[in-house]
Image 1 (cartoon, one colour):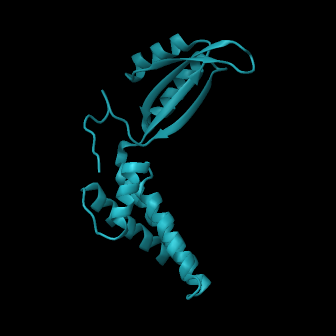
Image 2: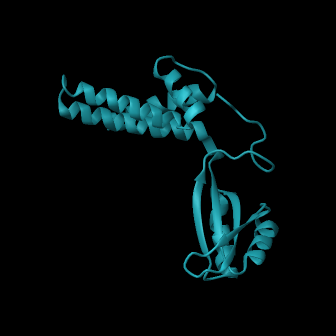
Image 3: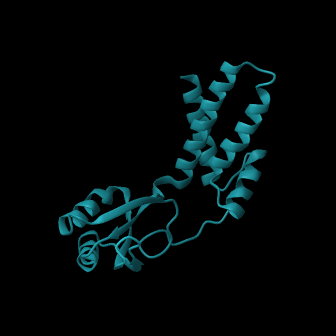
Length: 177
């Protein structure tokens, strides 16, 4: 419990510092550089660097302490990334359907979200396909599923997290660290 709570508090504190464009020094600088030039999240970078240090420390400490430390480091890294992205995490949906035009119209009318058509080609069927791509908030996802599958029960949809979304209807300014 201490490892979980410690990781939570450490991650929350570090996340707030980063979100405020601050730094506590040390590994922060490396994490910021990796984020800027390699695209890795700050939490991922912290986790990997600290895990490497922890692996080296196993030689001088006991295994149980190292495992508790690993749990704390993991929780902290996850919380840092959650605080960093805040409520900005959106969902990118790719929809493949014979009724792509109807689905796009329903998304624009009911969810008030834009859509983009992408041209595709089915590898198995050899048929030309029209894909619909849209970005929605987490709370809009159930409604999106309802729209898609009420129009085309045999439609195909994938959903991925979009950590950063910029443009009309989303964040206007770009925060570059």
